Structure formats: C-alpha cells, structure tokens
Image 1 (cartoon, rainbow, N blue to C red):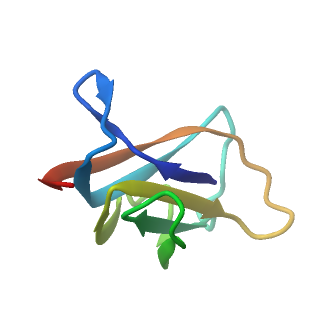
Image 2 (tube, rainbow, N blue to C red):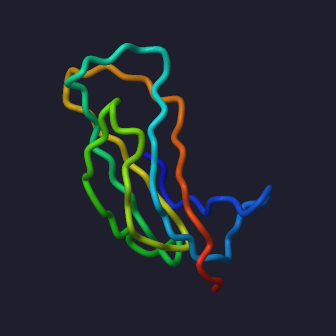
Length: 104
C-alpha cells in the first residue's frame, strides 16, 4: 500500500496539480503464479494530504489482464493491493497511468 503520493509531472514531484487516474498495473517479481491467481486493487484520492482517502474498488487484476482501469482524480493518489491469505507474491512496484487535469 502506498498512501498520499503526489505523483510526478516530468522529473519533479507535482504537489499542485489535480491528477486523473486511468489505469494501474501491479509489477510482480520473480514468482510464477497460477492461472487462477488474482489480486484486488484499490485506488484512493485526496485533495489535501490531511483529508480522508476516498477509496475506489476493489477491482480484480489477473495475470491475463494487463491493466486495471479506474476513474477518479485527486491531488494525492493512494494504491492498495490485496491477495488471498496463503498466496505468496512479491511486488516490485506498479505503473499508474494518469493525466494532469487542473491546478490548485
């Protein structure tokens, strides 16, 4: 889980813009997962870091699904990944596709 990330704009962290998330892809490291493996994905959005996170999801990601699509926006973005108890998986990160849609 990563919380309240401002996300970059170019090479700099962008604290002032409103970002609209399009999709997220979890990156799994070095483990073979079965065809029935799935992961629950949540995206969270905030205007201010001290506000409560507005979570959307869960949406289900499977290895055959390259992306999990979300529609939401905020100045700060959070992401959470969950697997069933007993599943063993190592994540090396994630890719989040977003665009800047405004400024504060």
